[in-house]
Amino acid sequence: MLSLIIGFVLVAFTVYAVLPFDFCLNWGSVVVEFLKGAAPVIAALIGIICIFIGIADIKDKKEARREELEASKKEE
Image (cartoon, rainbow, N blue to C red; front, side, top):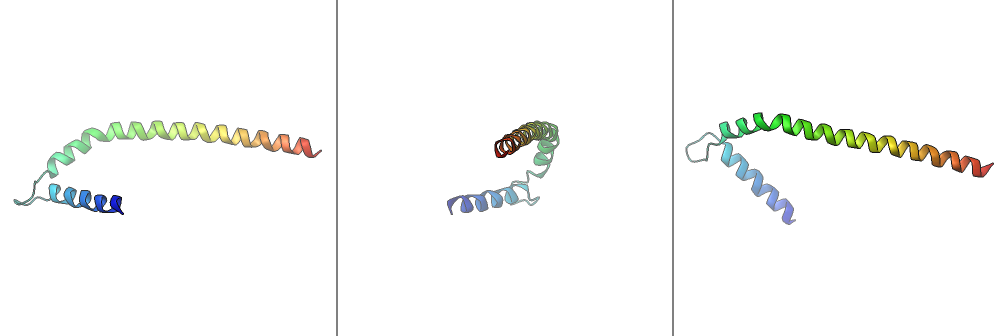
């Protein structure tokens, strides 16, 4: 419940900070510049994570195949 409340507060602050009105923080252009600079870094990190997940998946499939072969040999 607490994390849900904190999530709503943070989303509300984000909207307040980005809105282009005088009574708001008007950080919209700064946020866009940050996202432009951070996009390649975020893409690289996501790519690295995907590679690690793919390697782990291949290892899991090999392990499952080996266990199936051992189980079929024990049955015979």
